Length: 328
View 1: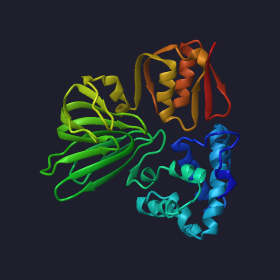
View 2: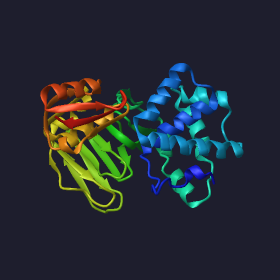
View 3: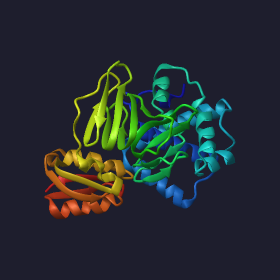
């Protein structure tokens, strides 16, 4: 086992899954061909944006050595073309070739298990800050929010959308086959409806119904919950929380907006960070400043500038991608 997979300086080795994914993608691009000057600059900016980026890159460099020793990497030109292509099948072929490597040893195995293979190999994905509108084969309209990954499978007796992570807004089409939206926490079964589903790792799944109704089913519970228009609820793998009135602000993302009312800055920054290519932080002295307004998520740095104009805040730029907000 390569030493780079062992904890460093007492660190427990935990790296956020999205950073691991980014590091693995960079690793594959560098293995397949030399980076262009522009790509080199992008890679250096990414490394400097977060200390976790450097650690993840080091571990991936060690992993690359292990993979090459096992002769299990896809041929370099094929790998590069597939990773940079919109062809989902080619990209999944490359990533699955890496996923198939078995790494022995405690810390190495734990690090490897962090890799979000199901998300990487998903049929449809959006990047950070990207939104994508789809029309499925049955006519169902699907809007994917930032950093989302899902699979679509239409069978003779069922239409199934598996949301690995992220957020989607669905307007279902009429079809004799029932539709099921599945997450790791359970399922959402709509009845001629318009609704959104948000699912993040290690967090409850949130469902919001704008029209019609859906039935929620927690994975490890016999109880289900009918959720009607104008209501929202969250559920885990074990239970469904008490439904509440729909907060329409939480669906403003479908219009490219982040709408908040008296939200603590720490929570606002965490939400805005979903759309930012890099890292946004909130210093402790500014965490409780309240934010209200409507902000376009298409330009996160413009939002940071607006916050500085309207609130007692100062932005500290470590790089153009890594920004921390402080109280003046």
